[in-house]
Amino acid sequence: MTTTRRTQVVVAGGGPVGAVAAAYLARHGIDVVLAEAGADCAQDLRASTFHPPTLEMLDELDVTSALIEKGLKAPVYHWRDRRSGEILSFDLTEISDVTRYPFRIQCEQYHLARMLTERLATLDRAEVLFNHRVVHFTQDEAGVEVHLESPYGIETVKADYLIGADGASSIVRKWLGTEFDGFTYPERFLTLSTTWPIEQAMPGLAHVNYVSDPDEWLVLLRVPSVWRVLVPAHEESEEFLRSDEKKNAVFDGIMGDGAAVETQHRTIYRVHQRVAKQFRQGRVLLVGDAAHLNNPLGGFGMNSGIHDAFNACGKLVEIIKGGASADLLDLYDRQRRKVTFDFTQRQTMENMEAMRAGQGETHAKREAAMRALLADDDKRRAYLLRQAMFESLEQASAIV
Image (tube, rainbow, N blue to C red):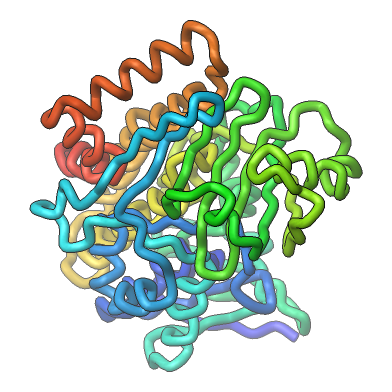
C-alpha cells in the first residue's frame, strides 16, 4: 500500500534530538512528521547527563521540571585518582549567577524522548510515526519527497524540509553522500549497570565521577535506577567482557568483592570522533549523532545534539513563518560545525587523554594543573562555564 502525506518538516529519528526538533517546530506553529524506525523510543542507556543550558532550552518545551523530578541533581562532579585517593571536586553552584539550573540532571535520555513523543501525538500539527524508517528521499527547489518504509508498505511524505536526526548510522547522511570524517578509538568500551550501592563502598561519591588509574580508568555515573560503570575494553574478547570474571574484576577494583555484585546490563560499544563535512545540503539538515560523534566523557554528545536542534529549528521557523531567506541555514552549518570542532571534539579528546594518562609524568602534570585550576577563582569559573557548555553557545552566537 502506498500513501502520501503533506507536511512542512519531516524529522527522521525519534531519539531525544529528533523529538526535541519536532516538539520545537510544533510549538512554533510548524506542521511536522516525526518518523522513527523503531516501535518505540529506544531505551539507550548511554546518554544520561543534561547540562544547565540544555535544561534552559528544554524549559521552553515545558519538560525540564519533569526531567528534574525523574532524574538526580548533580551540582558537584569529581575527578578522582584511584591510587592516591585524591579527589578534585567541581561545584556548578558557583555559576548560579548565569543559570537558573546550576547543576547537571542525571536521567536516561529515553525519558525525554518519550515525554515529547507522547505530547506530540496529541497535537494537530504533529504526527508521530513509529515503525517508519526513511529509506530514500529526493529534493529540488520546491521541497523534499521522503519515502518511509512501514510494516505495510512504502509511504511518501512531501515536505518543505527534512531533518536527519537518525543517529550515527544515519541513512539521511548516507543518501546525501556526506563524508563523515574522523577516527574510531582503538579500544572498545564496556558499560556495566548495577543497583548495588557502590556509594557504600566508596564514601563521598558524587553522582558523576571520572576515576583515573594506570591499569584501568573508569567512569562512575549515578542515574535514578542504577550505577553505570564505564571501563575501557582493550583487546579482550566480547565473550570475556560479558563474563562474570570480567565483571568481578571490575568491581573488585571498586569495592573488593566483585562476585557479590549483580548487574542489570553489560554493553560493549566502540567510540568514535567524527564530524560530517556539511550539516546542511539544500533542504536537508543533519543534527545530533547524524552530524557528529564523540566519546562520552563529559556528557556532551546528546547535549550538543539538542543544541543543534534548537539552532536549526529556530532558523527554520524564521524561514517558514517569518519569510527569511533559506540562506539562513548556511549560518546553522557554520555555527554548529565550528562549535563541534572547536569545543565538543576538542574537549572530549582532552578528557579522553586525561583519563588515559596513567601515573607517569603526563598524569602528574595534569593533576598539578587541575589543582592550580581549583585554586584560581577566575580560571575555575571559566572551566565550569566551558564544561557546562555555556562557552560553546556563546561561541556559536558570535558566528555570523
